[in-house]
Amino acid sequence: MSVEYLSPAGSFTPTGTWSLASRAGDYVFVAGMRGIDPETNALVEGDEDRIRQAFLNMQYIAASEGAGLNDAVRFTVYVTDMDRYRPIVNKVQAELWSGGPYPPRTILEVSALNQDDIFEVEGTFYAPR
Image (cartoon, rainbow, N blue to C red; front, side, top):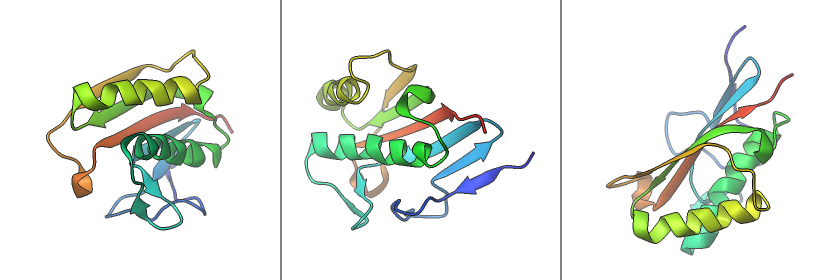
């Protein structure tokens, strides 16, 4: 078994020397997704819209390997202001997961993210071949 690096058509272009995701066996590991519009490669305006777009970017990449949001094994979320953004993250997740059940999640406040962004999410998905 070897690791496959993923960059599905229709995704945004990575902002550096990294792949959007990788597959190792039955698991897909999606890199930190931000609210980048795949059509423009620019950050989406508005906090809630940007956070939603990041989750949708992750969902799109997972779907390219046959996994859905309910196949998420775990997430790590990074925000630059816990008090401000955690409630928005919770709202968006509640909408996208239709009220649950939710995968395990760790949320961390960090001092900065790439391009002065406010939010990033990375995830692991179970996607048997």
